[in-house]
Length: 639
Image (cartoon, rainbow, N blue to C red; front, side, top):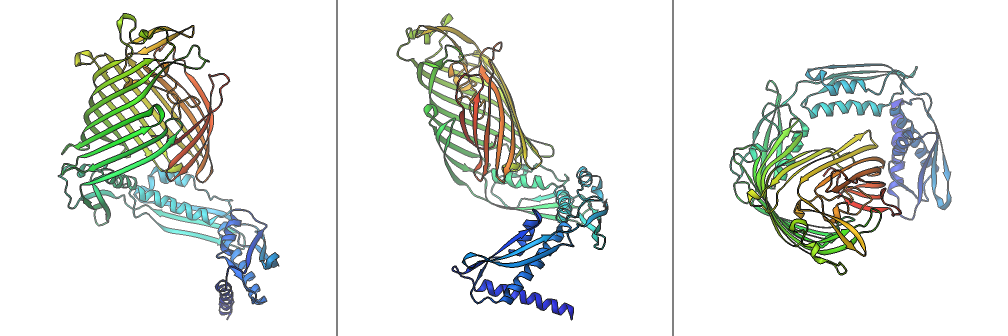
């Protein structure tokens, strides 16, 4: 009879609450809950249990209904405390009338003595018992003898290792034993776990189904081979790689575990639709570096059964009034794993100003202004290499590139000898006219980026080397080499560390001149390197505290570059973090005197659905009496 009586009481409470909810309307008084005596996470869990739904009161609510609601709240509060180890709590409650007819259910809770962990027994069997992640999971087990029993942690840690093992091929990992042995009389608990990892699954056969592309194109997209250990991460990358080709309007990748084989495998069955189609994209943006900018792109993919694709984009940015047209064509090499023929064409028109600074702490003086038009064509062979079982990819390109550059730079009013801008020592032309450069080189780009939003971490390395010679038909001789790295590290749930470094060197002739401006003799250092290949530093993604591309010889670019940055982020809200950073660097012509500039500052990061939005305030440490500079950018710092 006792169990029937309890059921009837609970049923009556439930019916009373349902009647209150059913009679709700906008004009009715409100029933609220207040809890004292405990704090989070206990408080949050109690409130979530007792406030299962919002209740509005009507004038015909009886005292018996209030008694049932109070009893129901007390019962739910007691249950909500148990997952955190509090089984002997005391909950007192009362109904408190408030203004405007509102009613408050006030609960005062004494949590009481918690249940403590007495013994912990964890055994792991199976092929994966020696996995590093299993060993680490066991060593970092958070509930040990003397700790308060927290069942939320118990459940979370149990699921964590199952998820991790499933991600590396142990798809049948399961607990053959998992018990909480409670001794409520003595407030003690024994934890017993036996985990069987099972056998590791391998990648099996891939059925690509029917598609219009020629054989030897999509078959080389996977970053794994038949017989490699199964990896959930590689499967995610495989699906993404299929979409990134642009070939498919619909992609379904079905994973079929085959436990009947020894060793067990996961076969893949792919069904996709391939149509030649056009894609259009456009964007409007603003940044403190480029000011306003517009971009539009048209892509056609695939253009034929060969899997080739064409991308054409146009753009404009307010800074330097720059207009650009870019085209990229890529053709897979049949039966060559992840190899492509590629060609890139860039046409660009922008403003160009020549500024000089009489001394390091004086403002720049403009002595010449004009425009520059550039045409750049690069053709080569691209090879995509997989590293660390496909978790990282490197893009290697052997290329030949041709550049045609034409500048129209004229002295501004007030320069006493305009001819000095068109000829220097030895008769070399410094400005005005056309340059042609043909060069050969190698480009390397290693990308390893994981996660999204705040959890984004990884690294990216970039390097290139190329040479131009008059023997190839170029107007100038030069050699350029460059290397850079960008790295993000997560530390716990709240901290992130970012480091960046780059170095570039060019062997190209430099002309040194002295010109007279406003009665002052000002040095002018100009490289013969074409503008398209010159290094520039300063701005949101370089040395903050200085203007965009401000750090270079006379604002027109230099032969060499050195820069580095260190940044610490601390997350203070779900999608918000604060940052502290230090930058150093410069672009220069003279290695004996690089004059590295320093910037320091603070910033705020918002990880929005459009990508990270970064707002920084930075001070240039090498300038006297200069205000703080604002920098605004959108996008991950790894790219």
